[in-house]
Image 1: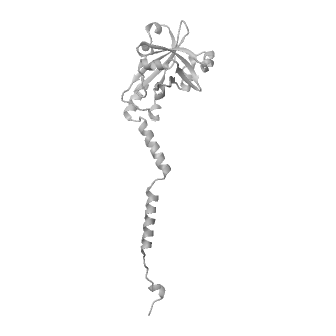
Image 2 (image 1 turned 60 degrees about the horizontal axis):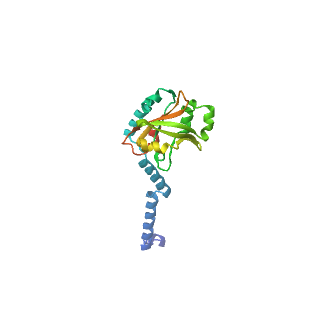
Image 3 (image 1 turned 135 degrees about the vertical axis):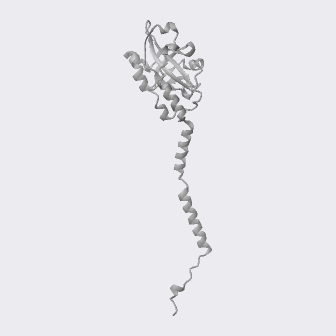
Length: 218
C-alpha cells in the first residue's frame, strides 16, 4: 500500500543550511566565552591595582612589627633642646608617598583625624583657629637636621610646608620605603611649637601598601 506524500518526502540539507548552522554555533561560542567589555575593564583595573600595591605576607609582618615599635623622639633632638621639652604628643605614623617627597609639592600631608586626636591637645584654642593661616614651627629630624616650617590647614588637610623640601633633601627621604613617626612638642621656656620626625627605611618595600596592610598602622 502506497504511503502518503508526507511520509515519503526526503529531508535535504543544503549548503546554505550548513553555513547557517556554523554561524549559529560560532555566535553561541562567542556569547558563551567572551567577557563583556565592562567585565574586561573591571578585571584589568583590579589586576592593575594589585600590581601597584604591596600586599605581600613579608610586608605585612614588617609593618606589624614597625607599628608596635616605640622609638624615643629624644634621639632626634639636640640634647640642649631635649632637656626643655614640656610634653610630646602621641606619634602619627605613615608611609611616605610620592606626593610627600615630590619636587614640586613641598609639603607633608598629615591625617586630619589623627592631628585632631593626637596633636590638638597640645594646641591652644587660639592656635587651632590660626591653623588656616598657619603656625611657624621648628621641625627636627635624623642627623640633627632642623628646619623652620609652616604648620597649617591646606583646604581641610593639615600639612607641614615651607621648609619641608629642604628637610626631605637633608634627611634623604624617599617614597614608599621610608616610614615615619612624627611627634609634636613644646619648648618649656619659650612655649615654641616644634615637631620631631624619626624615619625607618625598608628597602624591600617599593610600592604603596595595600589597604589590608596600611590598616595595621595606628
